[in-house]
Image 1 (cartoon, rainbow, N blue to C red):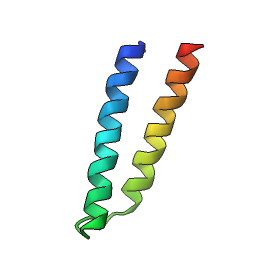
Image 2: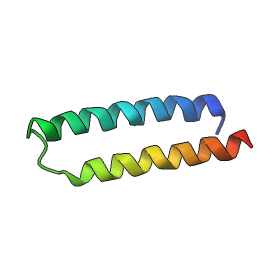
Image 3: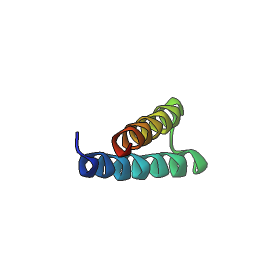
Length: 54
């Protein structure tokens, strides 16, 4: 996967994480485990970007 693809996915994942956090704060999200999954997805993408950059 190219760095541009990874960056695009990272921006999307970070936006998703932000939206989930907002839903938790306003008590609209019942499945709070989705926040943990989104956080891990962001971490995976950052790891792939760091490996691609080296």
